[in-house]
Image (cartoon, rainbow, N blue to C red):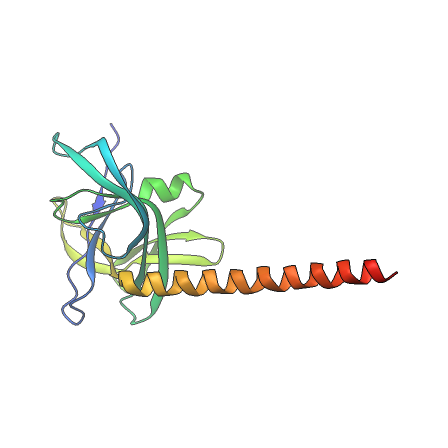
Length: 187
C-alpha cells in the first residue's frame, strides 16, 4: 500500500499577511479558502471536491493565484498557480504536489544541516518547502512553504499596465501598416 504524506506550513510571525499552505501529494488541485491573491477567476456552480476526511466541499471559484514565496533564507520568489479552487471553510490552503508533478515539475529533497528540505523544480525555477512545522506520527518533521498573496488591486494594476502596453504595440503596428500602405500608393 502506498503512503501519502502531507507537508504543512506554519504561520509566519514576522509577516502577518503570509498565508499558510500545506503541500499535499494527495490533493488533486490547489485549493484555498478565499479569492485573496487570485485573478482571472470565474464563479462556479455544482462543482464538488472530495476531501481527505471523506466529506465533500463545494468549489465557488476557479482562477489563477499570484504571490511571493517567503523562503526561510529571507529570499522572496514570485509564484503563479493556475486552476486554483476556492473552497470556503477550508482550514488550510492546499498546494497540490501531484498537480505540479503532472506538469513536469520534479519533486526533490535536499539535506541542509539536519532537516531535509522538499522542493519542486522545473528547469531553472525552484520553490522550497523549507519551513519546519511539526513532527508527524513517525517522528519526522513536516515541511512547508509560506506565500504572501499579491493584493487584488496590485494584480488589477499590473493587468491594466499589460493591456496598455499591448494597445501601444497594436497602435504602432497600425501606424506602420498605414505608412506602408501610403508608400505603396505613391509608387
